[in-house]
Image 1 (cartoon, one colour):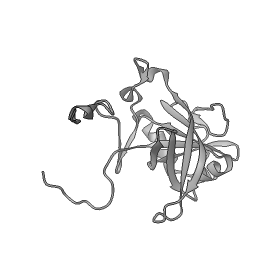
Image 2 (tube, rainbow, N blue to C red):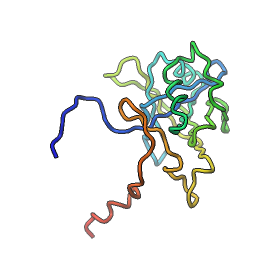
Image 3 (cartoon, rainbow, N blue to C red):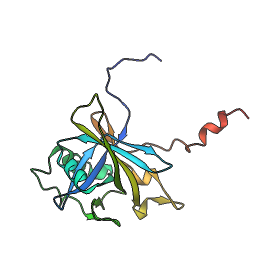
Length: 188
């Protein structure tokens, strides 16, 4: 199969996440496509956001943020909180907030997965000026009760909203078990 060069923009689907924090004591949310797992051993995530974003102010003030995984069912609200600034628009009533053991980062009941994260480091990329990377140690994870199969969170039931370039999509079909499918190729 021939390959076609399309430039530098990644084509992969990435999770769209809604980051929550308190700014001046009020819940604020922002949608980000720059989210990633950094470590599973000591559960750590990263998010990257423009330094001037109102949400960043709250993360810097509280030292906490939440990562909320939306579904295609709330795509309109998810897109909206990424389009408008909390400095100009009150986004606190758009979702039903709840808090874990620490009341510094609101999580969203309408999202099937929520992670409470404590900032452990703030950084920037040299080639992406005016952006901050927040590294957060995951302190608590919540999953909606109807998203389990055989006692485990099920990706199809969670159905995370994916950002695929310039569009959103839901999750596709099950492809296989992580760290198991490749075992058949290991020479014994």
